[in-house]
Image (cartoon, rainbow over all chains, first blue to last red):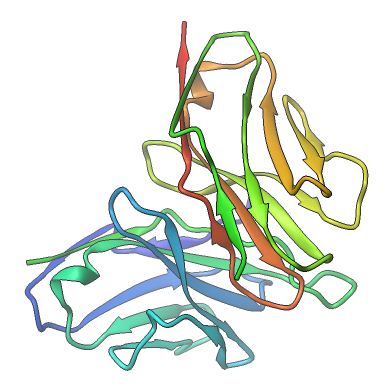
Amino acid sequence: EPEVTQTPSHQVTQMGQEVILRCVPISNHLYFYWYRQILGQKVEFLVSFYNNEISEKSEIFDDQFSVERPDGSNFTLKIRSTKLEDSAMYFCASSDFMASGLQETQYFGPGTRLLVL
Amino acid sequence: AQTVTQSQPEMSVQEAETVTLSCTYDTSESDYYLFWYKQPPSRQMILVIRQEAYKQQNATENRFSVNFQKAAKSFSLKISDSQLGDAAMYFCAYRSHNTDKLIFGTGTRLQVFP
């Protein structure tokens, strides 16, 4: 069964450093998402991406964050200058279209645990 | 703004028994989708079941079923014949028909005892 994959599974970085989290969505999916889950808290939406541009973003997704689909398979989240509060599990998800044109169910990857020291 | 509430931080069930996890939500919209996701200790979010608000029939997936009460804005998950592998964090989630984002509840940790 097709799966969303994410690399790395764990990342430790120093405050102020740039990190890039990578995701390979399910191959025929057209919508891509990033969510984060700070330890012990809710899963929160960050951004959605469709047709090579941001479709929707939350207030969390400020100028420190960017997303890119550099090729036909990868989808990345970049944090330019990490802060302590960026420590979280970051989940990538992807979805397809339904026949009605609406989005299908979002399927999640296993997550990247980011620790900012 | 839409919100999702899971009032049970923890639940436990004996193996082979049935357990129901509660979820309520608040919205002024009539067209939306509801989901239950499972997050085992491995941390991967796995879709358990999905319900479209326009469908009156409750969704069922094998041992998992929902009780969708649209007027009451309630969306509970029933797990029948519980198995040890069902032990996980369960998240209820809402998505409006005209937005991309899922809105999650705080989760319910389910323990399954042999």
